[in-house]
Amino acid sequence: MFLVKKIVALFFYPVSLCLGILILGLWCLWVTRRQRLGKGLVTLGALLLLLMSLPFISSGLLTPLEYRYPPLLNPEIVSWGQNGSTSPKWIVVLGGGHVSDPRLPANSQISAAALGRVVEGVRLYKAIPGSKLLLSGGAVFDPVPEAEVMARIAGLLGVNPQDIMLEMDSRDTADEAKIIAKIIDKGKCILVTSAAHMPRSMALFRKRGLQPIPAPTDYLVQEGLRPAPGRFFPGAGGLWQVQVAVHEYLGLVWAWLRGAI
Image (cartoon, rainbow, N blue to C red):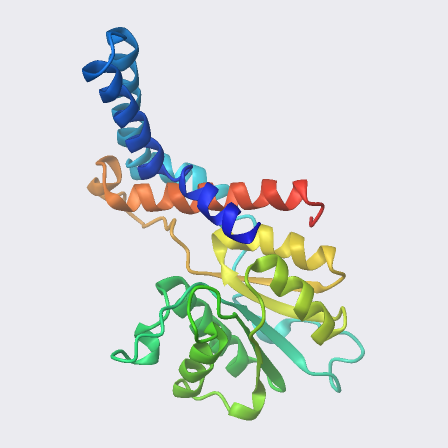
């Protein structure tokens, strides 16, 4: 089921979806006599590709996800409750993808999203005395667990190895919530993940009885002080934003159907 949902999701991503519509339209035009249908499908595929590549449209899809929870700008004021002085102050950093290529340094083996999460986790670790990092990520499509690579990067950034715990058995966010709930024993933690991924992560962790404090990072939608001209021209960045948004909305629906949120 895990592999099936990964494959099915690929067909809903913008490039796959638009190309599929275009190919079907061309097939109608060149192989069948359904010319009107073929022209309609080609037009639809091209129009969808154009619209989804426009940043001001793609950001509109992603903004409700990314800005549901504000960034944790002042971590030192987080209230840890009565046991905060004795219990570990957990900063949970979720994995975001990696490829264990031995030719590259650790920081080049993980995705940009995962690197942003690790950096944010280290920032919070250095701002909160007595905190510990719980780095999460298993070996999904790679023989090396992602948490191991994340730990090497955290070490390079000055984190004490004794303050790092690894969770290396999960395959997806639902697994991470299930396993981490047993480690923390339904306690409070700071949850670090990409901003778009945060709503789904918060729902999954709360369902497991945890008390996560959101610390979103890796924002794809950023508003400058002045509008940039490129915002109104199509580009690959817009398609990537739509893909991330579609991935998260599909993930929320899937988790809801399975009763995980």
